[in-house]
Image (cartoon, rainbow, N blue to C red):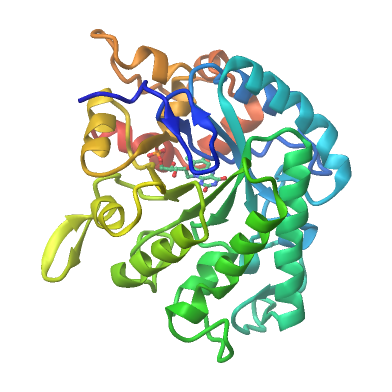
Length: 360
Ligand SMILES: Cc1cc2nc3c(=O)[nH]c(=O)nc-3n(C[C@H](O)[C@H](O)[C@H](O)COP(=O)(O)O)c2cc1C
């Protein structure tokens, strides 16, 4: 059954107008100082009124966690003003909007003193002190409060794709021998303490979501499905709204108790139904999306299809809809709100960005 365009209620009481979200997509369009600029506003505005949930790109919570040029910031109060324009526009369209809060850890390339959960003098990374971990948690809290002030409907804590929290979650990168390392309880402590502190410091009806990369996916090596399920359960106990799975293929399978199952199904079966599970991962057609729902996703997120189809939720159920895989033509991209800056960034990964679609 296709109920993707039906509303969905979250733990915090907010209702999404449909079960289709725009995945967080880094577009490198922010101003040098991390403030939002008009190109970024236009890119998201064009998707307002179509997607039930719209996310900004990964947004740094502190300057020492910034990971690339043109990254959006929420590390200071002066970032709030431009974001208010964005949240006003999107909320007026009927969509909800969140921002994805991020710290690069060992990928914070602008810092000469990068902190993570191991020491490596060659790449100038060192194990963070406990005081620094408390500071990171505090920076997430402050950024979440700024997000609320800027009018966002919620935040997502970026625990996926190889950044700070992923580094802590993985037994390969996490070399700590204190309570923030060791078994999965220790390795997930920083993420869980951050989620708990954020939840406690924002309003009850503010959405708090978490994104993780489950089970040895391309950007996370060093956590198995049993550990992923435990982390999902603990996040559920902290009363988060959406657990977002960063998968390359939404129907990726893994072995659990000697049998193959889709990762989504395992996490759905092991968590409370009030926790909503979202997934991205090579979803282009309506049939892909319905299939993702059938194997356990409560909602789907579009990355690349969301780039080329600003109105996917509205048009994808029409009979003649064909997911459209554009050639590398800037004129086409301009029509869908992708500026030259964003287009140039996408051009760096032609295989990644359009490769999956071309294989179909
Ligand atoms: C250009 C680009 C930028 C991305 N930026 C982010 C990001 O800022 N945060 C994040 O969690 N994932 C990011 N991702 C991953 C997407 O959110 C999504 O999970 C991934 O593209 C798989 O979905 P898809 O097959 O629908 O594209 C990015 C992906 C692409 C292609």
